[in-house]
Amino acid sequence: MPRFTFPELPLDGLLRRAAARVPCTTALTSGATTVTYGQLDARADRIARCLARLTGRRDAVVGVANTLDTVFPAAYYGASRSGATVALINPLLNEHALHHVCATAGVEVAVVPRSTAEQLTKLRDRLPLLRTVVVTDADDGVVPGDAVPLHVALAGVPDDPYEPEGPGTDPGSVACLHFTTGTTGRSKGVRLTHRNVVANATQTALAHRLDATSVTLNHLPLFHVMHLNSAVSAGASQILCPDPDPVASLAVAAREGCTHYYGLPARLHRLADDPRLAQAPEGVPAGPRLTAVLSGGTALAPAAARRLQAALEVPVVQGYGLAELSPLSHTQRPGDAPVRGCVGWALPGTECRVVELDSRQPVPVGATGEVQVRGPQVMAGYQDDDEPSPVDADGWFSTGDIGHLDEDGRLYLADRLGDVFKYDNELVSPTSVERVIEDDPRVAECVVVGRPDPVHGATAWAGVVLRDPPPGPRDAVLASVAERANRRLAVFERLHTVEALDAVPRTPTGKPERQALRRRLRA
Image 1 (cartoon, rainbow, N blue to C red):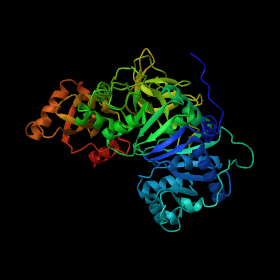
Image 2: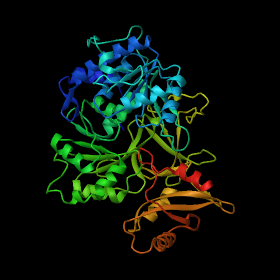
Image 3: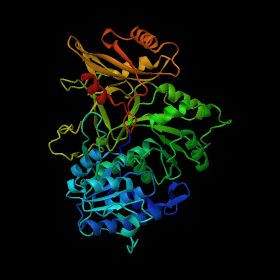
Image 4: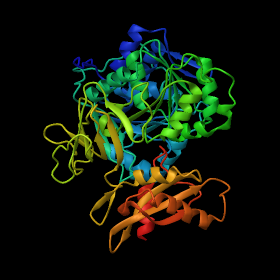
């Protein structure tokens, strides 16, 4: 296997390099707006100089909202170029979560849309470090409180190349603060170095086969920096598609000649079930240049992946990663058959092993345990010094995910460590039980959690969304669903309680809200 190498660049150096290599290549397209790499680099320079004036020093923390528009990439690379640490702010956060992110990161300047600026105005007395709020979408000049429109902040700022004074950026210094989704507890600030992010951008571009001829469709609700950095690393063009309609996104992909389609599992599930997909005219509805549909964030059901592959005539590829891994560590390869739980091979330069939960010793191939990853993308640590580090002295990061490796080195995931539960002394994987339930044609979707039990420790509780209309009285159908599933489940996995749901509660990234369900059941 060839040795994996990556450039020793600062984060913003990815954009500077792309602008030097392909200055006239389209970097971003959003609707009628097109931005070349040369233009994007110049915009990042202006924002860098502006932020340097606002912060007054190189080691400040600048919060940037990852909105799916052409402003975010310029603000993201510009903040890094100014010498600041970039704290990513999810613009969909509520006030409580937004305060946690800004307070934990120590945000001093926030570059955010008006909706987030309005929330920050209410929080200013609880965020003493926050000095300036810059509003990215206030072309009309209307901003809350003492916030400043971006075009006003940039007024008079030249766009000639900007380099901060002093020594160059240490690749081992912290470039970004990413926050975990908080599905198993409070959101944690993850410290990623310039080396972490640049290495993972290179790894992802290699694994996804991106180059300067690639055109990627970004059909996500927010801008994920993995897709941004990997495309910029390769000099690829990115098409931003904020329209949540998955079928409409295919038309955009065809019109723009996209080679790679990035989507969330929840949207891809809807696309696979959309009757309009089957009614598409002959040929590949997403365009003849499309080479792959890529999914990540949570599991995409193999049945949905197979339907998409058949309809689009291209591979549907599943990936795996965590914020602590910058974020990608594994991906399937084009041509891999969709298999439940399989997330493919480790990225170039990445090692993976599975260890026993108690002894922490590596287990044999095929045995289940906690997944550990080692590589240049493993984080530097958490922002909160009191948060225990999951990285051991040898560099192995404990992911908190349960899974196993096959003989070919492919990784299969079962559950989060916090989601599995024990019935007597047997470990139960909620995801494995869900897969059995969802094989029932009467079930649209479901979620399984452990319900506290004084005798067995915990028993399987299932929330089931029936297809509409249910074929018979609902209670009778639920009982039949449970009976059918239990015939295929081990004694310790069997369903003890089944409840009808209108929808499975999910996080903004599509993951089931198991923690909230467990709290309700405990209450």
